[in-house]
Image (cartoon, rainbow, N blue to C red):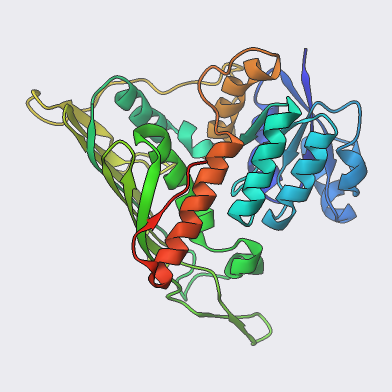
Length: 365
C-alpha cells in the first residue's frame, strides 16, 4: 500500500523533502500546505500537485493522508507534530525537532503513546561519505573508540556573504549553527560511538551585526562558531567544531581512532575532497576501503544541483523507514524523536557550559 504524504511547509520542504518523497517508490506526495497561498501554489506547480491548503490545523486531520512531513519554521514543529500525532498520522519532522529540549520531550512522549511511526530528518546519516563511515564502524574497523573529531566550516556568515533568511540570525527562532549544522554532527557521533554524557563547550557569535538591504542593522543573537568537547558513554572523547565565518571555507573533516583501527577523511555532503580512508591497526597504512556507494532502489535520476546529495540521503532514509510504516522493522535504524531530544539536550548543555557552567551533564533521553 502506498503511503500518502501531506507536507506542511514549502521552503526547505521543496528543496529536500518533496523531491526525496518523489524519488522513492512506496510514497505518494499527495498534498501541500503552507501559510502563503502564493508559495503553496508555486510549489504545487513545481511538483505537479494541485491538492493545496493554507490551513495546517485542518490539513493534518485529513483521513486520506497517512504521513505528515513537517518542514515548517522550527517554532511550528511542536504544534504541527502534536496535532498530526493526535490525528493518528505518522510524522516526519525536520530537524531540529523543536526550539527547546522541553518541547522535544513533550513530542517524544506523545510519539511514544501514539502508536504511530515518527522520525527526525537527520538525513546526513545517509550521505555517501557518512554512510561509508557507518559501514566501516559496523564492520569493526575502529573497535572500541578512543577519540573522534568532526570539523565543519563554511562562509555563510562571513561579512562578504549575502544575508540568509533573517530568522537564521535569531536564537529565539531556532537560528544559528548549533541547530543548523552541529545538530547533525551530534546525532551522527552519538549514533556511531555512544550517547554523550557530559559536554564542555564554547559557543560564540563572531559576526554580531548584519547590514540589511535598506541600510539598517540587524543585531545577531544566534551562534556562528562553536566547539564542543564531549565525553561519550563508550569512554571515548569527541570534539565537534562548527564555524560559518570563514572566507573561502567549505569543508567537513572526520577522524576516528580506536583500539582496532582508524578512519580519516572528508565527509562533506557535496563530494569527496579528501577520500575517506581506513585501516586496521595491523595494516600497512590507511587505504581506500573500496566500498561502492548505494543507489536508489527506484533508479530515479536526480538532477545535479546543490541539494542533490541531501535529497538522495533523505531518499535513502525514506527507503529504510518504509517497512516500519507498514508494521515491520526499518531496514536500518532511522533517527527517532528520542534522538532529536538527545541532540536538543546536548545543545542546551553546550550553551550552559559556554555561559560559564564548565562540564555539564547531559540527561538521558
